[in-house]
Image (cartoon, rainbow, N blue to C red):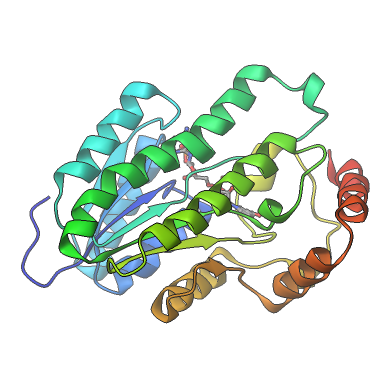
Length: 264
Ligand code: NAP
């Protein structure tokens, strides 16, 4: 994609539904040209057409499986070769739920590949040009699950803890370079995530649920303020403050009881 002077360009992974789609819509509304990435080519192309029509921006749909080495490398090249990337949103991710010894090990591996490896490699692909231009932003979509171990979603919580630790470290490394990073830590958000993960979270109180649009609004507001960790929503911020203040063993045990209930 060649960029006209003054236009901004963003790459959003996992843009065909949920939080990623909300990022794509909001960024297009703000005038960003976009490259959107996910596996499902039809949904992605339909979204690209809709955004081009509605907001008069350039939108390139790039179908790729980011757990697949060739698919990931192709997106890395795309990110690295464009010298004028303003924003990378590492959003694609999924969760597996259940007792670890009973889960499919290949799905666990793919969860680490997508939630961690793809995010690390795409960040690495984006940063050199951003640092050179002294301009650019990376939003790494993490989760409230990052803040404590997650019994019955052990791998998922560990991947998100990695995302927070990694992003916080980069924040310090990049101090003074003009490049901004954010770890976005949503709580329960109404997307396809829960269905794909095979959990029934419908018993969770309404106050803990957010729309993907509100999550994205909070992330972009935090970006404007230069905040490193964004926990969207008052309910989620209260929850994370309370769990942060309690003994870790209590939080682990309570999380375990909760997950026993929501697992379908
Ligand atoms: P979602 O609606 O299931 O969206 C996931 C997106 O990722 C889809 O566009 C999906 O499209 C894409 N994707 C999945 N596997 C992929 C792969 N192998 N390669 C490339 N793209 C892939 O879920 P969501 O809630 O919006 O999730 C987005 C992020 O938010 C995730 O990182 C998740 O961990 C995080 N999060 C969600 C919640 C929540 O409650 N929803 C809470 C905290 C954090 P395709 O299937 O077409 O590839």
